[in-house]
Image (tube, rainbow, N blue to C red; front, side, top):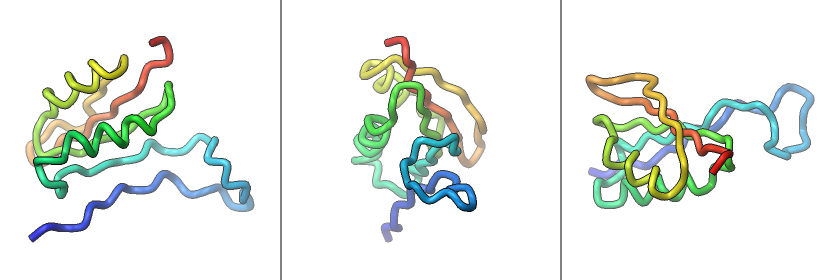
Length: 101
């Protein structure tokens, strides 16, 4: 019954650009946690968030407003939160790690 977890990739490298440095203006990575078992959902987001550099963002897609998760992330690092989609079937939340903390 479990489905594979998919972390959507960022935008592809521009045509002709092959350095692979990853330091370009790309779309924020998207983590759809709806298919992740509830018992490890928060830990999965923590791992993805920890990989985001200060000033970077991660978009989380959740089956409900992720208020408890956001509170836990705010305890780990200073964050800005932007709700991109608010239900009813999915919430898309951009979480940005602040550079000033």
